[in-house]
Length: 139
Image (cartoon, rainbow, N blue to C red):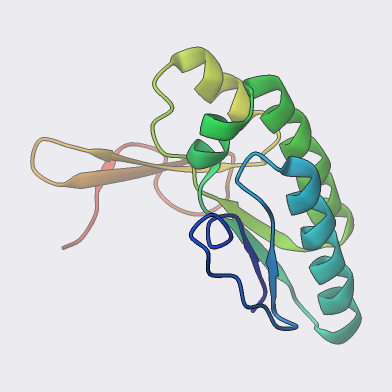
């Protein structure tokens, strides 16, 4: 596992090692991209399968504008696709339908989760797995 950390430097804790890189904050999209690309190259050379996860895009939106985040995602998801990696990105409620619609575009599919009347519910879009209609998550 490799980590690009966008928080610890602000908190005054940033001792790194070969598996941990730091950027100044979640809005440093260039720094995040550079460090992520370094890790992707390392892992591609030494692993059969590589997965990339980003938690959370919502925080990134607090530091950078929607257009910049979209462009960043477009480049990053392109690298994931060309490297034959798997990617998972978390997007909490962004507050408006336009931002959500824009940020969905670079992705092949979505797993959406919401609070239902009785339980949390899930549905998938654009994927060959999971329910297409809102379905309660097992407890």
